[in-house]
Length: 120
Image 1: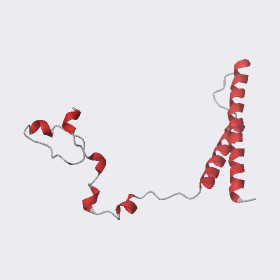
Image 2 (image 1 turned 90 degrees about the horizontal axis):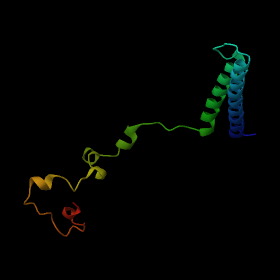
Image 3 (image 1 turned 90 degrees about the vertical axis):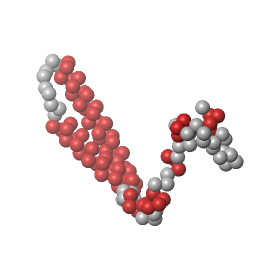
Image 4 (image 1 turned 180 degrees about the vertical axis):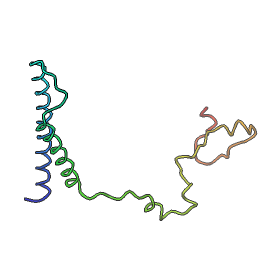
């Protein structure tokens, strides 16, 4: 049996155990309501089962997912120069209030793009 399959099996068992702990807690609260008893805490065995199940789930999810990549922005930025860092095409704005400040401005024609002044 490979380790991945064992971790998936333990993950499934952990989820089932956590669902069982939740069902047991709901059943215990119903029992308290029927018998008109007051208790603000769950029994220790239900709390212990929930915590152990949670730890089993977290550990096996990490094992099933595999290796994590480091989050480092420097790796992507090492290949770029200072000139290209500020060159972000998604921030280009072509239709802005600059044309209202210079009413004599005529945009260059023949750029292959539609006339932006008619988009108002």
